[in-house]
Image 1 (tube, rainbow, N blue to C red):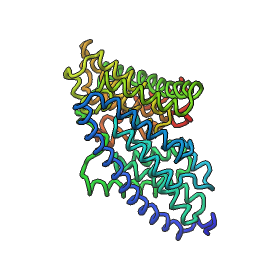
Image 2: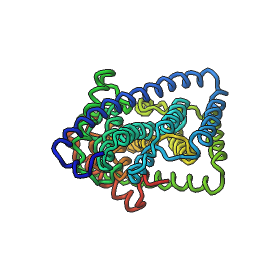
Image 3: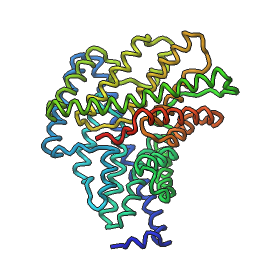
Image 4: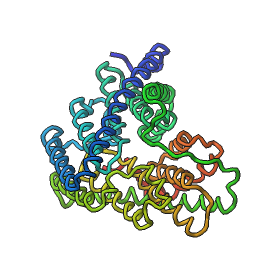
Length: 417
């Protein structure tokens, strides 16, 4: 067994680079497989729902009964998942809590939830996969606790980078959120895992990313009116991010105080099925549909309805313990709100930014606000759009969104139990 003093040795650093490379490959492959399975199920069930309306209620209910079985029998009511599970693993680093069979069951639940239209996110399961790879490899090799922490970070970064094609973002989200701004000396091997994983994914799939962002036009000059609008958007996104955090916490607390774990899952299934029957568009709200909605696909009232329903669906489903993430749902809520903002701007005759510009600002403000990770938010926007000339407006939105959300609520979304 290695001693902690070896962590600083040159030989051991070379070993860490090798581990980071290996984890980048494994995390990248498993993350790609996970998202491929989710995509296949999405396509199958969305087509099925269009043919048979009643299945929109029956399939979510059937999924919930599967979740109840795994939750009570296989997982023994172990509900930690995604970022929360990885952070708990880091806090109790001497014990291996992300046991492979439980990880498999939780990821299977996440695939079913995402594939059948539940309003949870893919970010959480991706983080869970990466963290589990690093933790199990570290404990299997009986490495020192500091090295296990590093391998967990490498796994998370590699898994995220493979599917988001944003290696710098993946690295920073690990440092800012997973490590809570500690262990900055780990950044090089974590970045290596990110680069290895994204290179592998590009080799297999090309430039596909599960956040496919529209082209953002170049802006020569923002102008005074444009700067005022940037500030307004940032403030709105800060408020929305704070509301998202508080809302998730309040709904979860209310459900836990009034209902048993099985009743919570049944409520999530019934609510999801009813919403799917009445407003099927809320099941799969895609980014491309939000972009085209500016041309009139959805009315302003429909967008407001989608915003409320997506928030309620995500809150109830995550509050019930369904395996999924809160990252992607938070961004999606912000994107829906950005379409509303842009529609109102056009109604007022303020053609200051295109819809993709406003959507980009919403991602930055929302992510910076609900995760308290402004650097990661800035880098994600730049990696998604490639518009380095917009760095100052992006910085402005990130800082204001973060300050507004932090002023209103000190917690970020990953501090919720």
